[in-house]
Length: 181
View (tube, rainbow, N blue to C red):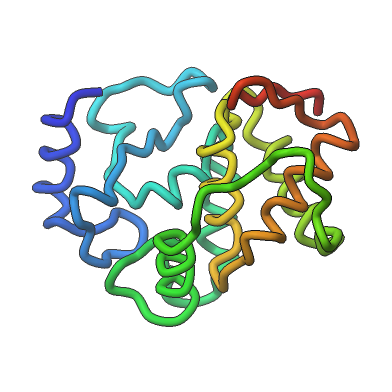
């Protein structure tokens, strides 16, 4: 998709996110296909909206029904996990994402195991995403951060990725990720 389409969508939406209506800086914006492309959704204007990159990463290839469920589960004013102008959980996620240093996934031991609920949430999200799963360590890391609006520590992310590897759910090779979910 061209930048012009994103600019058009942002103009039509008044420079705000389609889902939470918070101000959406162009650098944080992406095109969300309401019906995911991998599920047969088109690139036409009726199927495309502008939203924050972190929410787009969470939605992945979810069905429209599942996307609505994510929005409805927020029980009140919906806040995108990466909203710049939002307070609380969404702002925490943006801060964590901005300050997160690069991951070192060398063979050094990780000091702690991931929290079971966090690991299960990541696995469930990856399964839901189907063919839209992250294909690089960088995008996998960003996707994991986006799942935890209150923030997640770097060592927890490393532990989750290590556990994904040790359980055989993912395979890493030269920065690329492949899945066996």
